[in-house]
Amino acid sequence: MPMTQAHFHDLKDAGVLVTGGGSGIGASLVEAFAMQGAKVAFIDIAEEPSLALVRRLSATAPHPVHFFKTDLSDIPAIGRTVEAAASATGGLKVLVNNAAWDDRHDIDTVTEAYWDANQAVNLKQMFFTIQAALPHLRKAKD
Ligand SMILES: NC(=O)c1ccc[n+]([C@@H]2O[C@H](COP(=O)([O-])OP(=O)(O)OC[C@H]3O[C@@H](n4cnc5c(N)ncnc54)[C@H](O)[C@@H]3O)[C@@H](O)[C@H]2O)c1
Image 1: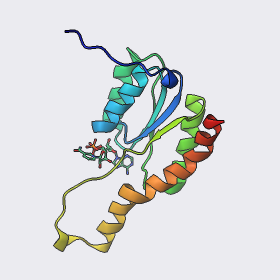
Image 2: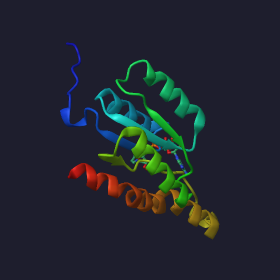
Image 3: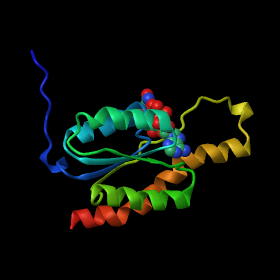
């Protein structure tokens, strides 16, 4: 039996921002939103897989997919990138806070610097990405 895919009409032309969209689950989200006709931007620190994803989707997605190379542990850079993403997509209706750094570690070897670096990617940036995106999300709700 052929596979059918649901179409979500409210995603057509909607601005979507995915963090950590260059690989893994984030890349699948970028592709799925783009194939629904959304205007997708994504943030990632890893350039190579991100550019490869943009190249691949340029052949099939209805709108161009926008990649922004940003380290999400740089809080001022998040603000600048969210503004650029909102501008590239014509406004943000959806934010997916997907990026994380989920490496395995041994409790005995955790240093304060490691803890801070881990929290910067796994917690702090998520709040500040929401804070930066919220004015755009509120506007889309009006
Ligand atoms: N894979 C799983 O089984 C699983 C299970 C439960 C939850 N999750 C969660 O789902 C999300 C995605 O998981 P995944 O397995 O695809 O992760 P992944 O590590 O494969 O991908 C994370 C992406 O975030 C990017 N990233 C990491 N640090 C960054 C930074 N400082 N700035 C910008 N980008 C950065 C990476 O380059 C990568 O593209 C994560 O939040 C993870 O915790 C995953």
